[in-house]
Length: 164
Image (cartoon, rainbow, N blue to C red):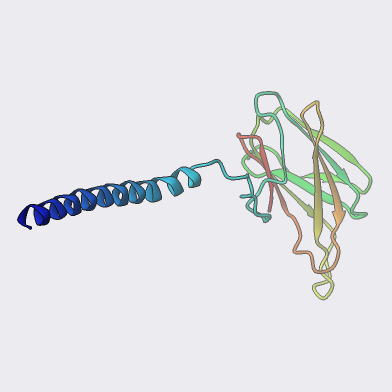
């Protein structure tokens, strides 16, 4: 009987060891498997629309030009904010001006020169396209009611174009 008890105890101990080994392996796999699955490259769905996103991009390795097209039907003025030697320049209705030789960064302000009725605000909207020749085409229009409006075109050294 003692031998039988020792045999049962030894078998139980061996079985307990196997169960413990299996449980340890399963636990290790359970913790490592989800990590491997989570480490996969997720789809690029991080874009969130808003003012913090560039409206377009140009190639900063090439010379860039800006072409302003006034379709707002009112006289405008534009100026570079970082260059103190220039004065505001006129941009009449239906007129187009090309700006060049300013590097690859700029803050360009564009604003109407006519008096604006405070009860009926006049805001501008910029539509920005970039041509294969690295020309930033800015079409300036009167904004629809309720649109906050654009006042500044910002070209950054990374090639990003922002509107403020």
